[in-house]
Length: 273
Image 1 (spheres, one colour):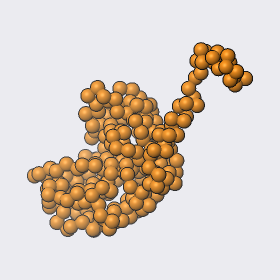
Image 2: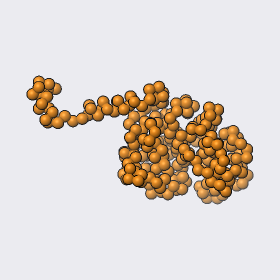
Image 3: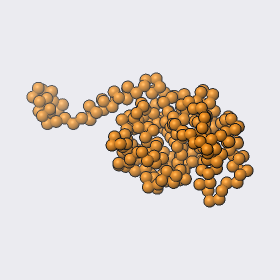
Image 4: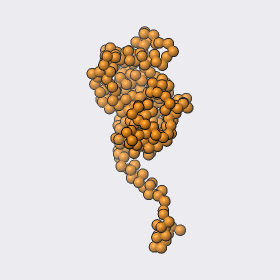
């Protein structure tokens, strides 16, 4: 059973602490929604798991099926079965989609995929996603609209068949029809292969299409609250202010009473005893 474990993860960039002790476990056949205000570490978490060189892990560990992910190069993480659908997919002029996908698939196989098998599978997935038929012959993301780039990330997911897929705001740039198509394709793929999903999104609409089994709220580089799909609805209706208030109340309740404060309270007749 595929399992991704993030344990007390601390990450910095250019000496600035971004993640400050993230703990998370994602198993196959689970769908985890990662939500939270902008600038609180969601994209940093996903990029760190995938091995982006810009991010420095200063403490903690990442395990995938018991193996130390931090000792793997990004391509080794991908071959192991981890996938990242990027928030801002890069354009690569001079490399066609077909060549890119074929090379990526062959990197995971002992023997190269047959041309007929590859073309058949790619065309089938392009049709599922209702993408333009000429996509295979276009340069990777070059001249693509925002929505086309996001669907192209899902095409890569379908072709590479990861065990755990991380999607960073894959719904941004998609209109409502495209959102519905992408969600349906993802649900079918997840159900068929029991793939684990980790989805960063700000929008309840996407999680109406793909209902999470777990929901996590990230604030100030930590997961401060976890729950089920009902937490998505609460965030959509009430925002994040109530979580800040809840955290403040908890901090006050847990704050230790100094000896001096206790003596003063007793002198004033305000003892808790």
